[in-house]
Amino acid sequence: MSNALSNTQIITLQKPAESQTRVIWRQFRRHRLALIGGIIMLLLVLISIFADQITPYDPNAINSDYARGKPVAPSAEYALGTDNYGRDYLSRTIVGVRISLVVGITAVAFQLTIGVTVGALAGYFGGWLDNLLMRVTDIFFSVPAFLLLLIVTGILGGGLVALIFAIGALNWMTVARIVRAEFLSLKEREFVLAGRSIGVPTWRLIIVYLLPNTAGSIIVAATLAVPNAILTESALSFLGLGVPPPHATLGKMLGEAQQWVRMSWWMWIVPGVAISLIVLAFNFVGDGLRDALDPQLRD
Amino acid sequence: MSRFIVRRLLQAIPLLIVISLLTFLIVEIAPGDASQMYINPESGTDPAYIAQVRRSLGLDEPVYVRYVNWLGKTLSGDLGFSFRTRRPVALEVGDRLPNTLLLGSASLLLSFVIAIPIGVVSALKRYTFIDYFLSTVALAGVSIPIFWVALLLVQVFAIQLDVLPASGMRNVRESYTGFPAVFDVLQHMLLPMITLSLAQIAGWSRYQRSALLNVLGQDFIRTARGKGLTERRVLGVHALRNSLIPMVTLVGISVPTVVTGAFITESIFSWPGIGRMGVDAVVGRDYPVIMAVTMMSALLIVIGSLLADLAYAWVDPRIRYE
Image (cartoon, rainbow over all chains, first blue to last red; front, side, top):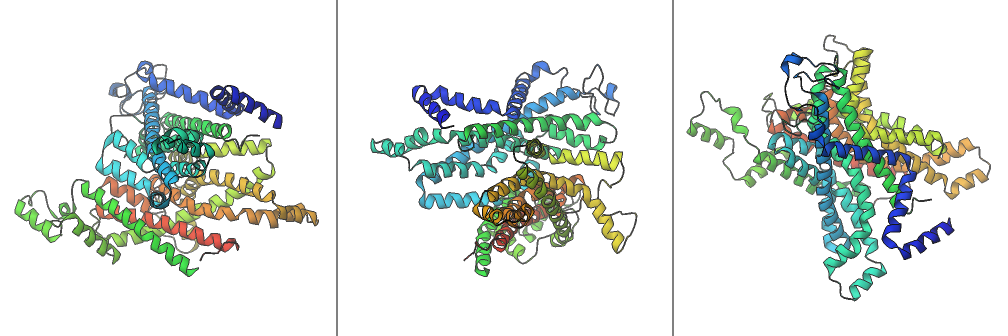
């Protein structure tokens, strides 16, 4: 153990950037579920990027002659069947996966921006600013976020972009606390003192000296926040209040499937499996990254 | 202790004010207001009449005056009238809040009863197949959307097996009293309760696992073993009870999750609580109800975390609040 550790340190001294990545990759690879999650994630991203090329039909094209008001079961023509309007379920699922990923990733990018800024300011400057920002964080923790999202999407009706910003604006608190805690301990370290003593400006200390050192925790928090955002969006869409029409989203497909639960199994199985698969993939990867990036968990 | 409670309640005031302000502003930006309820679009389109209605409702006042008016009324228990049912909102909330509290506390209890044994088993069988299996299942448990779980449960238990009702709180065709009435409600509550519990069970069992492992590594456990106690007594009396202490805080942290879950679960199972009332109010743009439900949810979250802090001091004698 101690031998392996000193080896790592020697390699780190010789080739810093690459070997650190390699250590993390080796740790991550050991986590089999994380690897599977990573592969599924990659596939889902590819599906989303090439969604327009691989959808067999227009996801919103209505074929009422084919459906006659009732969902049609999977067949050679429609691999995953159609809904009651005769819209191809496979194509709708593919674009649904794309919307889920877009919402999840952009909402998390937004919440990282707020969370990192708040956490860095509170942690670095401390004092009254820290007090104020942490109070605000506490308040946001007690806000009934889901209801506010319902109100924002249901009444203000801002569409996809408003939904993304609202999810981000109500979920940055965990990241802020993580970054603050890291900054509190990092700012006492020698390299920060060294930087300050050679006259490095404060903003540069924060962005170049401190922030990269918190990257590990931020990446883990972000990976685990994406499923949360995706589940929130799909829950809102499920209730008929999330992403406005004509977009097909997995949550909305499940919501519409409710009235066909009795006879059309594919209508609620397919989108449910798709959402669970996305969320599971991100959670597995997040779990693996946490094990790989946190030296305290390594053994 | 009572000073601590008072201080915590005082700290909650700014929070509730911020939330009320936020809700008030959102409703303010939203199209339409209370005057619509009193104006018949067929006869009352005369601008002078509309202005008169708005004036009598106080809608011509500036925003801040109306906020203060609304806040004053709310504090005195007057929550206005529902646009939809035209009943006082306070009565509507009074009807439905007990149902939400019943469902929420029952599901917290169920989560506890299931999560603790799972956590204990994974801690005792650490790094074995069972532990890995349970941790994978737990991760899957937090990944599956609860509204999909609800559909699955309805499909299996209400449609295929036909042993449990799929929606509502009571069998409307029968008028039970006494024990059959309780049994009827329990029967209706089972599926929503399980739905609401699943997310908690997954997370809590992991916490219980690490809490127990943490306690098992401490000195007093070695002492207990060293003085010759049976393993059963060491685990049951010394380790398990101490590992439950951090679990108490979890209940408080979980209240927001349960409140969120209530909106979804109550809507799917037509459970007559404030969650479903909130969703219906948003869909129907019933502003007085929306504001009441928002404040009520925030209040539940604040009370939940306060109760968790108090319970924490109660189970752990080392903690004393000044």
